[in-house]
Length: 401
Image 1 (cartoon, rainbow, N blue to C red):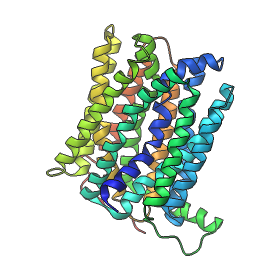
Image 2 (spheres, one colour):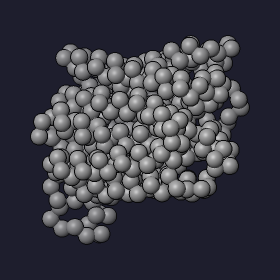
Image 3 (spheres, one colour):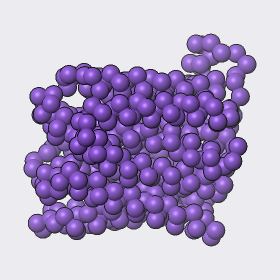
């Protein structure tokens, strides 16, 4: 299979998550009015998705190590599509939260196989280049998603957004089943006991690898920085700064442009630098930008363009951090890639849910909960990456079978 086509399909699978979150962000105020609920309850559907996604990855990753990547991905996409259809018909905020959780179970199972599929056939700089290519294609999802959501909102209402998400999941179901070859052999004996024992063993291998824990925490808190922004972006741009529903996707998409630039810069830098060092550079820049944002919001009356610029330069580093960090992290686990990928996804989703929910809980009508929350997450990310995984990441050891 041509690498570009494989990367495009795998990127489409990863994009299931940003589409599920970013597409309906412009519709949050309208959904609150339609479902007769406070906007804080509607925004809680984002942490609900993150929690469900974490659980979906917890089971999906190690199970894919034993039964293959494709069966897990196909099941997840089908569950995701059915849940989207149900959300488009729901009439209460309670039903919305429950269905978003179910939708995420499927989404997590589908997305967790992507990095593991890459690790099955690539390693080192080659894996970093493939992950960067997937990341570059995938970044079009959060760039396009809010604009698609705004368009559907104007034409058909918020329920149409979830109908389109269901159709997208079904398209990915067909492409995964038809075009992508299985990259992982099936275990000789499959039973509930063997699945449970395999999950416990593979997770144990990952937990016992010290440097891997450094990458887990570093990348997890870097993602939490972004999820704090996602959970509060609608308030910050649309309510605090008064941006319109049409302008919101432009402001939101500005972060994606810097992600794409950082992604391409990382690929070029692989000619001279190792993925481990590039990951650390990205986290360091993220930390500096978020600390500056916190200082600015805490000491001055914030303006839209200063806040936008600092967030762009910080969140944009995810385009460098994710592919380089993922390749560095999965390098340790040629036989446990599904479990390792799942643990990272679980941590990212769980931290994102907790930090995003805390930012909403501390909502006081200002930008301080958002800015301080992002700064704290970014600082912890840098401290754990350098303190546990080490300042350079060299002398890395492959985990035992």
